[in-house]
Length: 466
Ligand code: 4AD
Image (cartoon, rainbow, N blue to C red; front, side, top):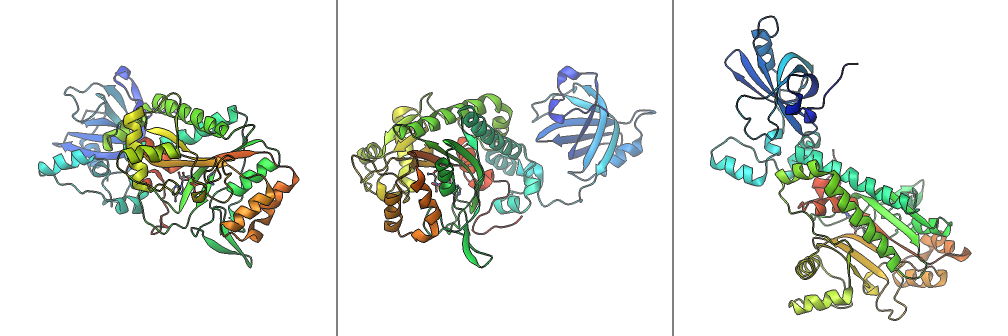
């Protein structure tokens, strides 16, 4: 096979070398009949290629042929790397390829529903272009999602989904190094796992069933099965009614469950070390991706501490109170007060990532362990990035009689989860865990404003295609 060079790795240091690249035609600009500039893009990176009529090498027909290619067509180009005479405006890479061969591998249709260059502009760039009177189409979210495979080609989106992959990768690597075992639990289950109404119900060969709202019950059963420490990466289904910037009907859950020897802070220790390692690694290994995202959606890097701040729910309520926000000390925080608390914490402690623990028992799911010294509170926690929740976790009840009682009190039909409750009758260790929403982590790490930006093919109350 011939040696191929990635578009993103053509650098000025390669001057005078012959390279072979494959990419998409982003733009073609003819200059008279003898020269054409072809900008080629691959995985979010672009390089300018120049076609100049030269005896025996490039004919004027070839220039004509090149200018007839439609945008987004796939082309193979062979040419010599050179340094442009005049700097290329708007490009970070001051390098060109002098084309000697050009083949079209596959043509795109002549009119595209999304112009990738328009879709890749930042809000500021759009404003500036409009002021200058440039022809430009503002690409809205629905159009982007309807034609997601085109939208995916922008440098920012190329970055977002590479970051997502890295988050998942670090989650696995870190937990494997801590002695956790990766498992897979069923997504077709007999009853709701988190309670509430947000369940997709279905008919399972004549039996009522639903799509799993989380791996909660089965990951705990794996602990009863002596696995000690488990994790799972898998789909989670929520029949959300509300249409918000942070809820999907299907998202990717990163779940953890582990034995607790003495205190539920052991679970928070894992959260702390896992996420600090994750943020460090993203900042270090994904610089290009973060830059690409920031060019379209400018954002400040996440502020976090080497040792994650932990506040109790009561302390949070107090901070809000001092700032003039009254909240129910035994209720839940709403989105607005969570955001406000996030701002207060950032100002006071210099971090946008923190753990809030010891939540009121009444607002947590039935399986949550109450605090032994004050049963109005629970051994549970939420974790926030930039004032929005990315994780919830807790110690679980491992005593079957108590679990049964709590399920009943929370209005759950105990019969539908009898195999779960029975699992605790054969010797079950104290344990706890947490669940992370992958799309939310990426959204909030990059300060994006909508979870649909971090889901490749989002499923929300109004969208089940493409
Ligand atoms: O807070 P949730 O519902 O907690 C559970 O599922 C528990 N079983 C977790 C545990 O182990 N205690 O969901 C966990 C995380 C949330 O913090 C959020 O990041 C994400 O999942 N999440 C959603 N992400 C996108 N769309 C939705 N509709 C989400 N609902 C929850």
